Amino acid sequence: MITREERDTGASDVSLRSVIEHLQRADALVRAGRSDDAGAFLDIARRLVADSWSFRSDVAAKVLEVEP
Image (cartoon, rainbow, N blue to C red):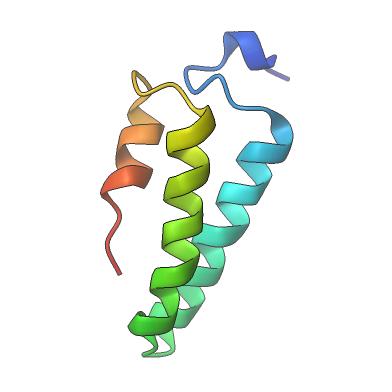
């Protein structure tokens, strides 16, 4: 297991899980043809990343770029 300090994102386990869950919900809505509804989950995921993850992280940059 990688510690928070060793992660490029600097994210906690809780933050990582939350972002993953929001992205998965958004993905499920997009696949169901509900892109407009997916936007709310993407906004939350992006906000979590912007508030607490390192911007030097490739993963953070990719999450911030996601569009429904």
